[in-house]
Amino acid sequence: MTHDEIEKAIIRIFADQFEIENPGLNDNLRDVYEFDSIDAIELLREIEILLGVQLTREEKKAAMEIRTVNQIVDYVVRLDRKIE
Amino acid sequence: MLRHPLRNNWYHTLKDLTITLILWGYYTIGFVILFAPFYVCSRFFSTDVTQAFQRLNTRFYRWFFVLLRYLAPACRWRVDPAVKTIRGAVIVANHASYLDPILLISLFPRHTTIAKQRLFHIPLYGRMLRLSGYIPSSAEGPLAELMLDSMEKMPAFLSGGGNLIVFPEGTRSRDGQIGPLNTGAFKIARLCNAPIHVLYMENTDRLFRPGRFLFDTRSANTVCVEYLTCIEPRYDDPGFSLNGLMGQVRGVLEDRRSPVR
Figure (spheres, rainbow over the protein chains, first blue to last red):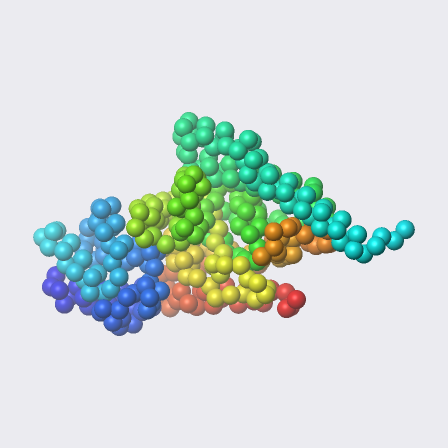
């Protein structure tokens, strides 16, 4: 998947799963949209479905510190490259 | 013979103070002497430490309320029988007093709850919360692993009959109004496809008022745990909305809320 495809997929997940439409790419999700740890865990599940893989505990732990959509996209791009 | 009102006040305050100190004594020294040995044994010998700790917590608080009922006979207690039959659900209730969470914990041997993040950092107590399988309210830093672990186990815990007890207001109401609801309980319910049971706690704040040290043991009072409703949302329905669900729960609580005191 390209960077743009991943970005579109993440924004679609935000709209479908979290009722957050077109979040700013550099907005702090916690501060602006009250996106919390439970949301992050749900998002990780969606990322697993998107990539078709099971994430390891370490990969999930690393994601818990992410705060912006751009960081999420970078995280997914890194995972995607690792899988390829 | 009529008593002098001032002497009457002193007598009542002294009685409240004595009872409060007995209850705090049970909570601290009583815990160490009567329950700590069982916790230690469970920690090292139980095959399911989390479940053993949850049962012990329930017993510890159950005995707390047995003692409270005995010491404060003017207070009556009414727990809707339907409450005790709840299994495998997210239980949400209004929050008026520190008694609310421990009262619900005393009713459900298989339970977990969301506790404030800072409590997990208190030596021994924080360890006990972890071993009881309780969930931190936020998952920053070292609590991230605990949160991930809790959430991975939650679907099996709920489908196995356990209950998640949450006070979505997050803090005690000081005026009897229902405060803004936090999303956590509802997100977990969605994540685990679990039903939501709504309860109403009444008059716990008259027995143990926020901001006061003393229990009010002399006022005639009836503490109620009332079963309001069960909501079973269709989480996979495209029309499902978390805000809609929260609004529904809020509406149920507000409809039941007593008139402003």
